[in-house]
Image (cartoon, rainbow, N blue to C red; front, top):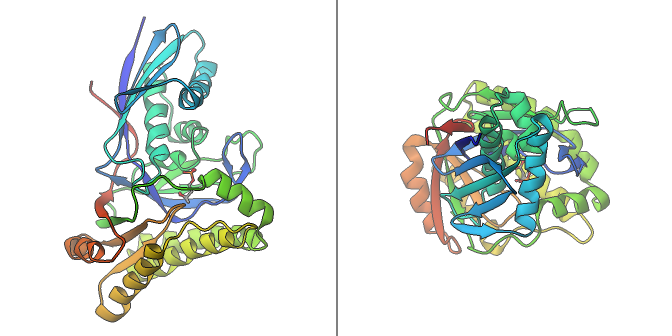
Length: 327
Ligand code: PMV
């Protein structure tokens, strides 16, 4: 019997960052993190079991190399839970560019985890889905969740306690995140490579790890009381501390471009001199993501577009976790 299920998942942005793995094979993080799932952009994936072999179509293009191997290994995890499924046909598409500065792997593996398990007749709960998605990509563990997600680093070797949970749902706070895209090029250093080099060689890495859990607790408090100014302080500190630890690696891992630095100054100027409610965060790339209130989003997007080096903006808002859709 073949069974086909379609799922949609959204990418997420970390407010308190994840940077470093305690186990690379299982994608076990060295510390926790805190994120917000962002829509309406997302990944839509259909999985159909009962095939002779696995196949992968991404954005209308058939893939057979490294990408298919990664997906097949992930599907093996589902086959280990439910033997006899055979091969799977995986058809997936993102409705946002992969070079947008948002981790497309976060929505990709969250959507695949939901579609593959449901098509196999399995009904996994949020922690089990998160553990599964994490094995595709560390940040995907958080895209299973609705709105704000707290990722637990866990202690177990098998990773069964390293999962993300929804801590405040997407309707808790009407925030917006405007992405300032600074280049259409793919990032130069993959996050896993940047993390590993930072862990191995940065004298600041341990200080970074030690700072994460207290920052998550403080950010949870700021989110619960919708304290924008406090969250601004904590989120910018987390992003800058993550990048500081990476820059201190040997050789230094530097994801920023000139436009990134200009944007940091611009966002701070708007907030401190002009009273605009904004704060920034930066992932493993040169783009900047700017948080604001819903009522200020048009103004913030227009301001970002005027900063030299910004090629375009994408506006996003809190979104639900990965879920199936009717075919
Ligand atoms: O799991 P990955 O490879 O998408 O790594 C994510 C790393 C950062 O985006 C820089 C931080 C984060 O917590 O998402």
